[in-house]
Length: 200
Image (cartoon, rainbow, N blue to C red; front, top):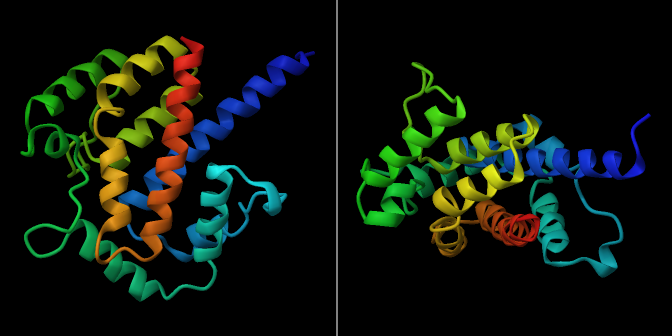
C-alpha cells in the first residue's frame, strides 16, 4: 500500500503535469468550448485567502464563463499569427536571439533527441514554440523524469525567456482573455522555478 507521502507526491506531480498541459492547450490554439468548460471547473476553493497562483487561476476561470468563441479565435490570431506575424512571437529563439530558427532551437532539438522525443511529421511548428515546450515538460513529469533532468531542461530552455513571454502577452494590445492566461502562466512558472530549485 503506498504511503501518504507517496500519494501526496504523485498528486503533486499530476497537478504540475496537468498545469503544463493546460497552458500548452491554451497557447497551441484558441480554446474550444470543451476546454473552456474544463477551465470553469478549476476555480480554487477558499477564494478569500488565495495566493498569487490561486488568484490567477480564479481570474482565468471567471474569464472562461460564456465567452464569444469567434472573438477568442480572433484574439488568438491577432496575438500569435497576425498578418506577417502576431503581436507576440511564441518562440524561444526569437526571445533569446531576436531571430527564428536560431542556435537555441538547434540545442533544444539535440536535448529532445537525448530525452527520447521525436518530432512528428505532421507538426508544422518548430519545437521551440511555447506550447510544444510545455507539452514536452508535461510528458517529462508524467514519465517520471528525474527532478534533476527537469531542472536542467527548465533552466536551459524555459527560464531564460518564458517570463518575458508572459509579460509581453499580458501587455499585448489584443489580449483580453489571454491576459488571464498570461497571469496564470507567469504565476505558475514562478512557483515552478522555486519548486525545482528547492528539489535540487
